[in-house]
Amino acid sequence: MKTILLAAAVSMIATLIGTRFAIGVMVKQGYGQFIREDGPTEHLTKRGTPTMGGIVIMMAVVLGYIVAHVITWRPPTASAMLLLYLFVGLGVVGFLDDWIKISKQRSLGLDSKAKLMGQSVVAASFAILSFQFPNERGLTPASQAVSFLRDIQPLTLPLILAVVWIMVLIAGASNAVNLTDGLDGLATGASTMVFGAYTLVNIWQYNQSCASVLTANPRCYEVRDPHDLAVVAASLAAACFGFLWWNTKPAKIFMGDSGSLSLGGALAGLAIFTRTELLLVILGGLFVIITLSVMLQVGYFKLTKGKRLFKMAPLQHHFELLGWGESTIVVRFWIVCGICVSLGLGIFYAEWVAGL
Image (cartoon, rainbow, N blue to C red):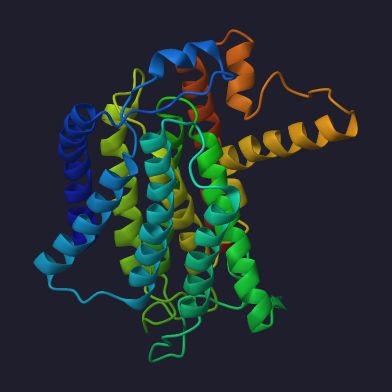
């Protein structure tokens, strides 16, 4: 527990202080956000706000993990290293996207093919590596089975399909967080809650691990390195919480794609390693709802040849055009996220209690 608390404390302090420093540097260099003309008119006032804040979050999480392990003298684990690789790797793809937007002063960064290629390379390499590094009990960081609260053994996939499944999860989660990052503090606050939930999930799995003689029973969890995954999850939650100080309305900095893609990838990685892949749909229900709003908007537009289901997608902008204030939308969406997280944690715990 000491390692978890240390990592969280260092990560939060790093974003609280580091983000302030980053804002000063980016303002001085003129690294401001370009705002599209076809969006809500209220967003035009945000033009020039520093972006690429995701870099600070990435550095804070990695710093928190390293410092906590050095102080407690605990060795790193394969699961945590792979999760950080996915987190930073997607962050680099997002950084390139942000940099092109800033340097060329346009709303589009990497073209869709280059962005997809970058995400695919990181996701595919992560997936392949996740089936390596078995521990003394033969457990690898990821499993070939689709999971909900645990592995669903009848849904064990061939290795190639398992790799594809993991890539789909990563693409879905990273793009879902990216779509949610449209209002001040919305994605940051929601991510804090979901990462906090995964911290609790990992701590519980560690305390009920099949690797321990004391807790080895029919209800124990076959998960590799749950304690170290809790360290990473706590670092992520704390880093987002610290960043929220500067990202809440009126935002002094945006996380950019370097933040949204990396955070989404980390959510997928945690779901994969904790054997709770389908539970992420509930825990991250807000991200799912917002992504579905975009899919429904596009599908309805094509089917009706030009009609729109919402005034604008993603969903948060629909409510903006209805006249809701930005802060009202963010807080109400946070409430929805909190309900989803509570429901997901309740289902996770109820399954253990019932012994299903």
